[in-house]
Image 1 (cartoon, rainbow, N blue to C red):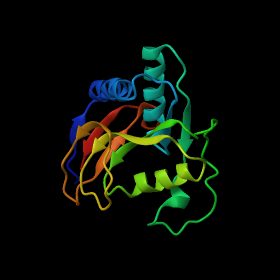
Image 2: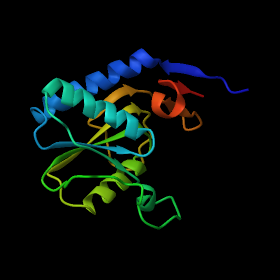
Image 3: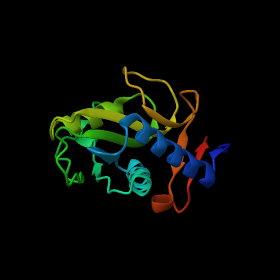
Image 4: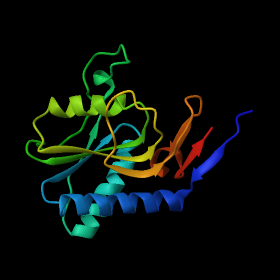
Length: 173
């Protein structure tokens, strides 16, 4: 039987999202020309929450989009179109914050960067993740991290979000 260890409960997830939001505002000196793009699937609800928190704190609307990176992955045979991507704004000359639930090898982040650059030339691309578990295979690091969680290759990190899983939390198996 798998042993499960709870790493973050719902309150810890909420605090991490709030802290990441404040750090984004600080680094970007506000939210002007800032857009949030969540990676499907759990990066989307986390990204929406960050965009909402930024909008609440700065009293303006921060545009939000979702990104399907499947066609851009180097470890997938599936070609095709990124039809599930919804970015209803021009990313050219904007500061884009990509949001994902977990960064591991860095390959999803690289795919997201490729997918974004196909759509325009942002001023900057930043990366926010709820969990950084290490083990990078590419020279990519997150700019904003909810929690650093050193793991072994054999361990599995599961992020749960209310919108998809019915509750918020992070567990390691």
